[in-house]
Amino acid sequence: MEIDFNVEESDLDFKESAGGKFGPGNYEFQVGDASLVTSSKGTRGIKITLLVNHDSNDYKVFDDIWLTEKAKWKYARFIDSIGLDATESLDTDDLLGKDGKLRLRERKDSKYMEVGQYFTRAEAEIEEMGPFAQKPNLESVLMSSDDDSSKIPF
Image (cartoon, rainbow, N blue to C red):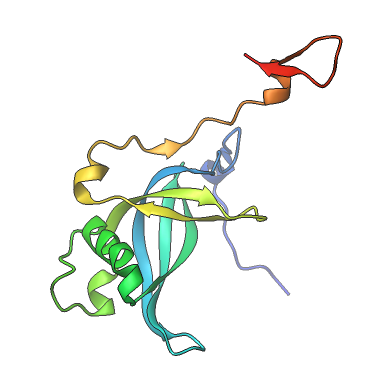
């Protein structure tokens, strides 16, 4: 069966490092989808799909914001980050297409990213965007004496 897909010469101008580095850091996002959910224990929440843009690519990041007393702080930060008022009545449609800024971190035991923090509008003005610098390899900066048990970082 024929593949019905057109590629132009300009499409063949590949980046040297396709996709760039996408890892822990501060990024701009857009709300791609939001829906109300109920957990198996009956806890209400909002399941959110965020489109995080980096190096002209959109990466999907998923987050759940639970509508509980203990999680009000997260709901309030998320709503503020997208320029809405958490004290007003909102519909999930109100969230769609809104832009904000967040910090991503690596999930434990995973290669995927998760939301570490939503930046309020005030915080977003001063936070630098982009991936964090790579962690240094501490083994390369350890100095050992004749006794291998005493490694001293410097």
